Image (cartoon, rainbow, N blue to C red; front, top):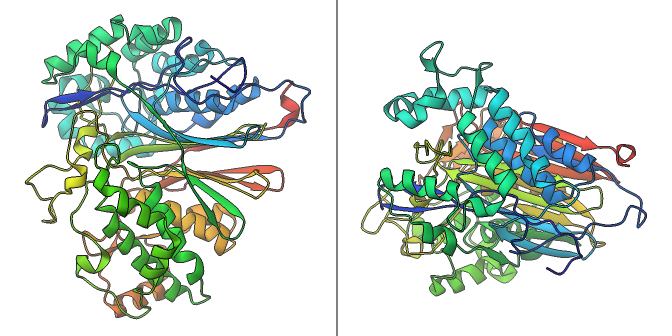
Amino acid sequence: MFYGELFDAFGDILIGCCKKYAVCWIILVVAAVGVTLGLVFGLRGKNEEPRRMGAVASNGVSCAEVGGTMLDIGGSAADAAIATMLCEGVMLPHSLGVGGGFVATIYSKETGFVETLIARETAPAAATRRKLFQPTIDLCRNGILVSKYLAGVLEREEERIRSEPSMAEIFINPKTDNVYKIGEIMYRPMLAETLEMVANEGAEVIYRGGRVGRKLVEDIQAMGGIITEDDLQNFEVRWELPLHSRFNGDYELYTSPLPTSGAVLTFMLNVMEPLFTNNTDKYWQRLIETFKHAYGHRTNLGDIHFEPDVQEAYENLLDPLFAAEVRKLIQDDRTFENMSYYGANFHNVEDHGTAHISVLAPNGDAISVTSTINSHLGAKVRSRQTGIILNDEMDDFSTPGKSNIYGIPASPANFIKPGKRPMSSTCPSIILDSHGNVKLIVGAAGGSKITTSVAQTILRYFVLKEPIEKAVNTGRLHHQLAPMVVDVERDVPRHTIAYLQRIGHEIRYLDNDKAYSAQTAIAMRGNEPHPVCDRRRLGSAVVVEPDKLD
């Protein structure tokens, strides 16, 4: 602990259950005092410098207000992010929750230090652990308003929900015998009890043979998992340096390292930065070809701590000279269907159940954090004794000897190994100016479309000079090499679609009821933060005014 006497840190135990492999792993976002596991923010005295405005943007309806309240009482960016994630876990149970994990890029304005976190404990200061948990506990007990997006997921997953009693108990409305619909109220009393125990007793209630941990192990083993209490105690988190690169002149991009897709994002921006043209059709052709190369090389990546052979591919994606060589392969009037042309050998699976939070504290600290339970509703099973929905993160690994639904072989670099983390499309990012001031905090939910959507927003905001609201909400395109099609939102200009079709691209329109990739972002205009929630998934955004901070 080295940033002061009072610290904030993140906490996380990851719970996953995948019967396919009969293994489980656990990450639960908790606030624990006395567990020193990583990066912290020292709290400043009130007279050190004038307070600035803070902001929170969340994929969850009303959850940004929960995080904003933490900033309002003098809490840190970490306090706000934890409280917001807990809220999202009940407002967006299909996307994240205490049974899921997260990746965060964290910036301390005072020290200028940036780190990436995959799982952490927290020792809150101005915002006590109880204050962080109480809004979510209240939601679980008093009622959770079902959003349009959640209602759509429940409708699509109704058959699976009905076939699993532990899920039917919480997602089938007893008054109607149907899955909950938009505007209805559902309750999570068992989860409320679990959160209350963690709020009152700290991490020991899960670690060290605590009662929540014992119940989790019992339930997971009953469902075919092989996790033990020792696994909970032996779980280790990683603090790592983020990827750092210069972008668009003097801007500094910080994003997450392997096994996330920060390197893929960095590569996309390195390739595209010099390719700006006022001809929008050609610009998007160049971007699509960049995406295809990026996803081709992504197939060679994995957890570098377990797959040292990925080092060369990893370094290539970060090297501007490699980007320049790839740039020579991009043609304005031609595309290719041979995957090897784009550097691909294998295909990696994608995740769907994600959500993103962007936080800017009044003192200039920033957090960009993406949470996930992998697929919608995770493993689609729930610990009945704790109320926690288990994730299916193990399914993010490739399976030896099996091809995906497109017939592409699995990636050996992403095969499962004990203790290994699977590849992820997440890339929580923070962009600073040359003076260390936050200019943009951005990240996204949406599986394999996360990386391309974040790249498009960054390029629109910094290169095309679009307002952040337009950069986030304008129609997007996506190509991940397999399948060999361009996914297109219906508000993409028709002349652009026609141009791409003439070149030879196959176009696939995305259904209106399926979110492409939902972002949250905070951009700075002068000294004022502008938080934005993606129109594709109703969320929430709040600005904390300086005069409200005593």
